[in-house]
Length: 43
Image (cartoon, rainbow, N blue to C red; front, top):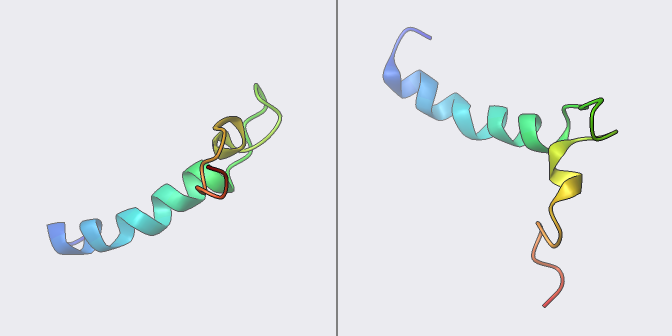
């Protein structure tokens, strides 16, 4: 990145990819699949 602003703007998309789409072999899926009720669908 050429500026702090660019880095900050890119971070949310990267974080979503890292937690929801990046396959992790130790847990057989993305890290977000290991967190119950991550999306807040269940009360």
